[in-house]
Image (cartoon, rainbow, N blue to C red; front, side):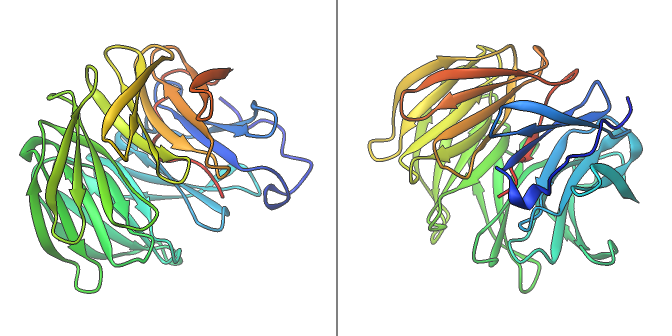
Amino acid sequence: MGVAAVFLYHPANAQPFAYITNQLGDSVSVINAQTNTVQNTISVQGKPAGIAVSPDGQRVYVSTPEAKGIAIIDTHKNAVVSTVKLSEGALGIAVSPDNNRLYVADWYENTVSVLDTQSLQVIGVIAVEKSPSGLMVSSDNRFLYVANRLSNSVSQIDLKTLQTRNVTPVGLHPFGLTLDSKNERLYVANVQSDDVSVLDTKTMHNIATMKVNKLPYAVTLAKNDTLLFATNQEDGNISVVDTRTLKVIKEITVGDKPEGISTHSDDVHVYVANWFDNNVSVIDANTLTVTDTIKTGSGSRAFGQFFSR
């Protein structure tokens, strides 16, 4: 699939963009969040899955397991400008808030590679537990959190030393992670136990476990961290949790096999990638209803932080 026409305006001057990996289509759809339309489709070989947008919005980092590494998209050119070979286990991916480091989880090697974003060279490798998947960097750049799917745990990594500070047991097969804006709570989607763990990041103790629906894969927050949204892949819906009471307050039907989920910078609109329906649902966090559905590409997965800011 080729690259569509380049924008007539600079991304920095527009609304945020959502970058959706289409794993079966070997592409990334670029959604203009002002119009909720796909404005570009970028060819990305290697079954793109995980995604992370740089804080300045200039680059999009994509994990490409079949190409055994990552691809780097230049958002001005809307094209892949570089690739890095790592291994076929590359899946979870995150970029540091200072834009200097990139973290890539290796599902098979049980490690996280640390790359310098300027040179794209590996500058460190962190040993974690079995099958690391979701990654999240705290906004103060102190810690990296890693969901270890087959170890049923979350690792907290000190980014000054690149050493593990804590390993906390959670539910079965943790996958997606998200942090609140104060870096006080970490929310963990546990796929096989159908629940979400809530960790206190100071102690890394599990302070609550919230039952949701079947196969929750990823989570995001909205409305000043008061609402949590979890994608329930098997049930084709989203569980909405009031983070003050830690109770599910609504279930919202979306497309088939939702996985990736991320929140617009307006803190109200939540975008959900529906893997089997090849589209993205848009949820209004004020009304808790789906307000739009955007056709994307084959196998829309978008696992990670896919919004530019």
